[in-house]
Structures are given as structure tokens and as C-alpha cells.
Image 1 (cartoon, rainbow, N blue to C red):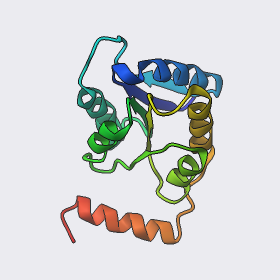
Image 2: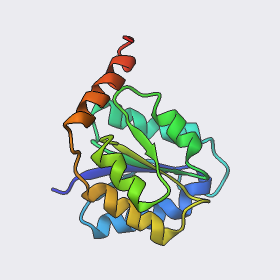
Image 3: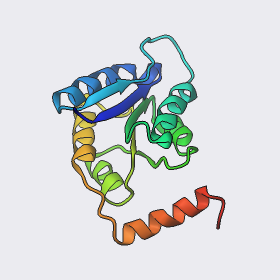
Image 4: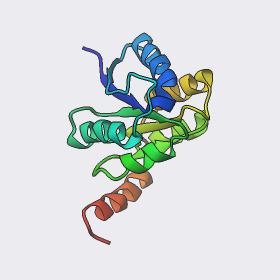
Length: 150
């Protein structure tokens, strides 16, 4: 069975999301489309909440969010315990999001990034491995913030 990767967007990210679904399938993943599936205007938090809830609960290990700039979705996603969402705009930051920050949600601006670059970023992120070590120590500090400790 292939790994599931959740993917969601608002109307501004719909076209790129649909393209990335085909790329994920081509790579052997099972994309779980959490919407939207229309170009009608929708509220991005609704779809960021759906995906982030799945990742936070552990139902799905990782996901991809797409909205116009990626900013709104990244704000929503990072409100959820255990979600480490990274808004990326190039291949280097996509790889570092996983290697250094163990990002489990990749966020892309559908009006900022073209299809080819988005594909390269997704391939880099899913292919990267968390390096742990000193990076784990830093993530542990973030986890303490989530738990209400300073």
C-alpha cells in the first residue's frame, strides 16, 4: 500500500493542487484530496483546518496545502499541535523544511509558484530525510511551546 499524503487548497490554489495530485500519483503516493474542488470563492481556513486536523491527529503523516500566497494556509496549519507547516518558494527551502525542521506540511502559494517549480519542491520535500541531531533539540523546544511551557 502506498503512503497517503493529504492535499487541500482554496480556490486560488485549485489548479496547482490538481496538478500536484497527478505528480504524487506518478510518484507512487496516494493523495487524499480534502478539497476544494471548485473555482468558487471559499475560505482557506476551512481547508487548512481539515488537512491540519488529519496531520495533528496522526491519521495522515503529512500533507500539502495550497492557497494564493501560502501565507494564510501556513498560519492556519501552525495553530495545530504537532503540525510543522513550512511555506516554501524554492527547492532549497523545501528540502531544508524536511531536513532541518521535519516539516510535515508543505505550503505553496499557487499564485506565486509555477507548476514546474512546485513539482520540484514537492519531489525534494518528499525525498528528503529529517537529519535529527541538533535539529531535534530545536524541535523539542517548539514542542514545549505547544504544551504551554516556556
